[in-house]
Amino acid sequence: MGHRSSSIRFLMAKEIYAQLHIRWVFHAFGCIPVKRGKRDIRAIRTMLDGLAAQEVIGLFPEGGLDWRHRLDAGHLGVGYLAIKSGAPVIPASIVWDGPPFRRDDA
Image (cartoon, rainbow, N blue to C red):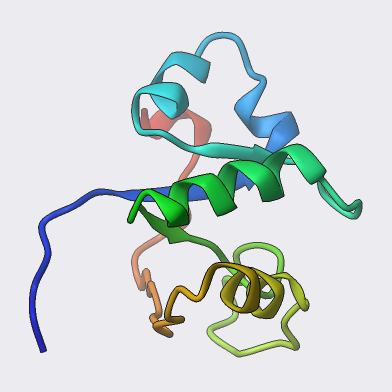
């Protein structure tokens, strides 16, 4: 298997992305804001355009983070993106066993 050096553009909840004091960080990392619980055509178009440009898109098909270390049912969006773009889907996991982040940790 080959290795390709690139960054990952992660999806994130629009209400978190919109926080003025830290939005510049999310923008600098190329995060893609997405409306939760709704079909977000703008985010879908951004992801499809990115995939067409050979970008790597990181998303959580369950719709968010789960601190319980278990796999929940995924949403259908990842399948739609794979079919429309022809991009491969590579399952991965991010596990954090440390203490939860607190506001005063930053």
